[in-house]
Amino acid sequence: MYGYTRPLKGELKVREFELFRSVYCGLCHTLKKRYGFPARFALNYDFTFLTMLLADDEFSSRCEYRRCSASPFRKRACAVSNKKSELAADYSMILAYYKLLDTMQDEHFFHKLYIWPVLMLFKGRFKKACVRHRAFSEEVRCRLAELTELEQERSPSVDLAADKFALILEAASNEIEDKSRKLATGKLLYHIGRIVYILDAFDDIGEDQKAGRYNPLKERYGDINEEVVSRLRNTLNHSASIAAADFELLSATVYTDILKNIIYLGIPNAIELVLKGEWRKTTKRLHNQQHR
Amino acid sequence: MKDPYSVLGVSPGAGDDEIKKAYKELAKKYHPDNYVNNPLSELAQEKMKEVNEAYDTIMKGRGGASSSGRSSGYGGSGQSGSYTGSFAQVRAAINAGNLTLAETLLNNSSDKNAEWNFLMGSLFYRKGWLDEAMRYFQTAVAMDPTNMEYRQALSIMQGGGSFYRPAAYGRGAGPDACNCCGSLIAADCCCECLGGDLIACC
Image 1 (cartoon, each protein chain N blue to C red):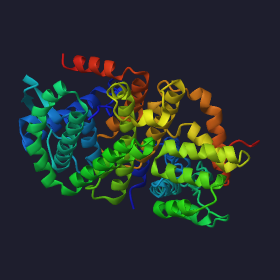
Image 2: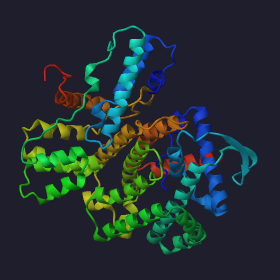
Image 3: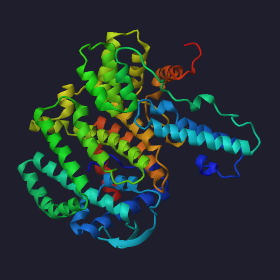
Image 4: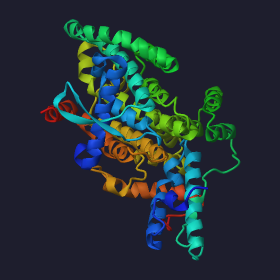
């Protein structure tokens, strides 16, 4: 949704990078298989992270080589879809739709013209995913409704608002069978959710101010000066540390090393870049590099 | 029981030093200090126990003394059985993970003293609401600056939770050097709570 949970590419081993890309491509193919071509627009790094996190020991890293519209000539390695990656694809569909709905409410009229057709394309697919995972979609709907309420009240508590968002991510662990794995994954996702919510709020602060929209950080801290930034850095890195401690309790899978990179390097890097105000610039450059 | 070598992540042909090293790394990873007031602390304790047992089994099998090289402090649990003071019930509830009860009790309390603020902070910390936790810990310390328990909690918050990191994932550009004294003192306080001591003089 936001792309903060991506690996720090320079620190990945080549084989780890290839495995990561095969999951990314695999998720894209799974989305297409289950929901048709337009669902591919839902693909992003956060859902790739979720896919790797939901994969457990039974998950094989079996690859097949396939062409796609992004790479029509050269076949690329794709992780073969299975129950767990299908689950991740379903969740992605649900979350992507809500994210789009949220963007739709925030944007200006002209931007809405862009988003509306995609929203329409997603609607039926979203409903299909909801039928498949009623408990999860219901949870997301309720938490977002609570979040909207908080926004209308202009709640001055960052944690209270972040909590609603974090609980959504925590709910993504609900279908893990192993009890302790479920608990640890849920808590890990909770802390990641808190980080993502606060980072997104920080990234949007200028736009929100211009449009007169609610921004939890603005309500909590008033003007964002250096002291506030250093407090945010502290609290976000603390969340990342707790998430890492929780992550260490999960038994290893083929993706453990990539996930370690994301948790110990990728997320702290995202925190740093967002707080320095360099996130959008950097990700745009990275994006262009990758598609060249 | 699981294969003790796979628990430690070493091959059965590994030398004693390698096993000791792997054990120490895991013991650092699952150390109770990394899971203070964390809902997963029990899970971490189980892992710690598993690692300790695996190490002992291997060392016994090799004819060495069972706990050679194993620091006794790594096994301990930080929870004491009974609490005293006016908020004993709240403390017990937080430690048991019954946050709803703790919250109700705290909200019903009329005496919002330093300890009340400290416990509110602990409650929020356990939930992962770190900004709120920081606020309450700050108030607690401001109200009672001499209390070590409150100061220690605040110092952990100010340290930004610099817990265990695998060797290959050192902090990229963190201001850790400035923090290390604070973290050491905080770690010392934690150790003292658990009955050990890290810095002998304080």
